[in-house]
Length: 286
Image (cartoon, rainbow, N blue to C red; front, top):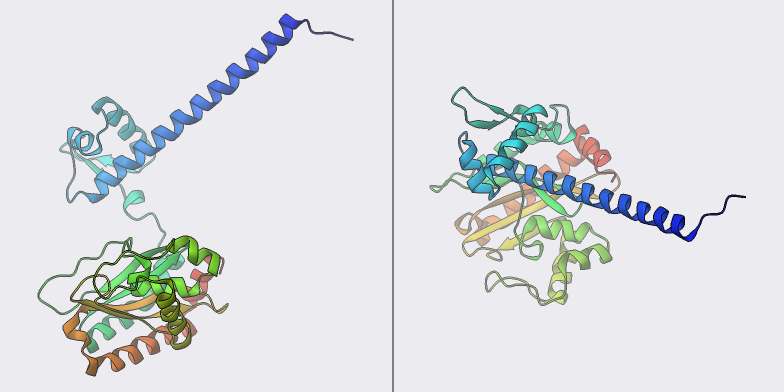
């Protein structure tokens, strides 16, 4: 039987420790490079024009030499390209990563005409929202007919307790997930109309479940209101929502019932008839 001496055992352990430390350092370096690469893509995504190397480095806070190396890697991965003027642009793979036959793309096309018709009938902007786990994203929208052009980001950042899409998502979640997303009450007040207590929010969410509608009357931004209805998978889970939102002048008491009934009808029709809703549900495992 071979027997290791204390010296051999110590050396073996030291070698294992050194290799483990090297692996940790390597993983840390890879994670750091990935994070910085994503930073560069975010900077370029937010820009309205191609950017020079120095502009990307300055905006990201990453050294120019590191930025150059990362851009080279991103170029090899077909995420960015350099134009004839030597400036960097996002490549098609970064600009439109989803294939045209992706379920979210098909849902967007299926809903497009319905969104435009809803907007034409009532005036406010109409959003097609998808729920990705506990995140909300705007898949498409029909802009409202008012003087100030509305701005919508792909990612919805409005608090869940103070927004229509958030209330629809919360109403669909199991209690444990709902509590984790909300945190402890009182919830931040965005306006004097914001729901801040758990009891009042539970009442509002029960109404969403019962009526198939969610509302936001000046709860997130004063002067902005919204009414929406869930898009429901065959399983009964909400995959997203259709939301009308705009200045409160569109949401007078005399118009609210008509808007609510129309958006609920359209959401139900899309849920019941569109194969894309089922495809999105499978994509989300719902």
